[in-house]
Length: 440
Ligand code: S3P
Image (cartoon, protein in one colour):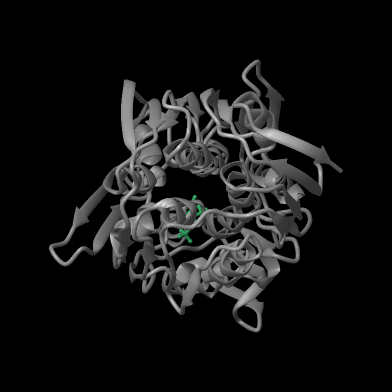
């Protein structure tokens, strides 16, 4: 994929389908590898992160066959059993891959060494080491904090773990390890987070119960066991669709807006739609169906007069990956966007608070940083300029949307990172009328 692109202003409109959901794709591969006889897979994201997880499972002895389907997503199958890894396990750029695999390998007898690229090796894994230790699993890491992460798998104890962060990665790590535990495990988080692991495990016959406490804490409990089923899949990724949702919501755009087909509508993933609606964008959902325990539908967003918004608490968790692109809606609004309680953004593929502020700043936008968030004053429009995506896919795509809505050409370096989640992004941008001036 191209490392450098130049995008010119031009309003977007039309209809698009986005790649399969990355969170569901990782989970379908990993949980599918635990199903006796294997499962067929459909709609998986053809993205670098998902291919890294497929590779990791092969290193763990699984058979993984994936081929592109007509819609560009991956179909195929995965089958275990998982055995001691024959090499170090390379998770590439994927934090979700590494942290969920840490739980999965806890149930596989033998040694597993999980590592990844430069960006991933700078991201904390102590958040999964603590719960795994609580479950009696022997783990070690560089400086007891960073990858490579070493897991001695094979024995997992029943335990109740209270997580200090509302992270679906941490919760899922505990649940995947818990499948092999000698009794029930539970994980309590300060706020509810995406629940695809729970839904997929229930769909495959396991007993998983969720209690939302009055103070907002979410407690999930799993009875150990073996998942059973024949097929798993993914719907369109709302985190990829978010770029088109925001582009369509910006005032002054074509009135017919943008429709994204077959988007995953899990409430813990659609914070971006709730925030845009509260800001004044028009959002319509149609053709809603249930697919393997998740709801899926077509989403149409049309422009509105955007008001400001303050986002904090559970809304942050429900829009964690969409906050960078929402900053553009904030800039276009009357009185701006304020985001708090979002310190987690600092440990994503880049420090997304500081990189967002500096790179939108390069396009003339004021973004004030807080330790746990940012504030974008309203009434601003980006100008042309140069953006360094810091090899962060969501920063690169946010800059591309800024270009379409701005007043001059935007030159983005580090754009190749987009392949980790949305390899067809530039094709879709063009199909919606975007002007990709140059690609190197
Ligand atoms: C993910 C959870 C989120 C999110 C990431 C995917 C998942 O991370 O940012 O892109 O699939 O579980 P945290 O759980 O660390 O918040």
